[in-house]
Length: 327
Image (cartoon, rainbow, N blue to C red):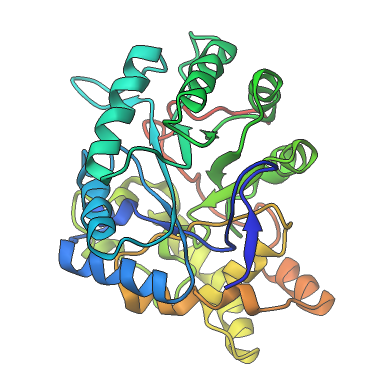
């Protein structure tokens, strides 16, 4: 597994990380034993960057990782997040008291005294980002976190935050069918020396060997409410992606490997974190850092899946609350 820099002053990590949201059952039933096997498989394949959050299963994902860390004692880089309050109603809290409390709870679940990266999961718009970064800087100075990150923010917010203290990473959705970061965020991160960490780089499973079937998804599956997975959008999207799948197979690649290679090809500061809960799915994309796209590959992928090809939005009107829109 090749390595990439997690921000100008951050550690070097595997070029592909592992997103651990699905350990909590967001995309179908999950069991802890399988999740632990997935973590083992990731480490054995050279992945040493793991991403989670306090709200993934309300601590379940962090607890699984903490159990694994205590058992295997691997040398890995951990990222977790806080800032979303889910009950009694969904809201955002970036206050120092809340962030400190949630970080302490996360560290306890993770069996750690320190995490290398701590994200603001969603920005609380009423609170100046400069105030939030001052809180994060104090946590860095106290040794609680190695650096901070921001999630689903705009380039303008990143610039304001970075002016107070350098930002290690921005985590926004980015894939062949979610291209908004190309309109300023990828460029701003490169300019500032901030890593860009794409989540859902495989389109929440659509860039796999088998299309997810909404008809068989549990009612709790996050994707059932996403417009891109509802009809008639989903049929249109699959028709476009079929051509990309054929292209990948003709080149001897898995679909997921080709899609991940495209993300990695967008810049050396990109560190995607595909999510899976099984070693079998991990095997489909873990070798993507070894794929070298040619200019002809890039041209063909752009023809098959041009920017903006997707039918339907990446979130519905409720899911998108808290995401900063800048275009």
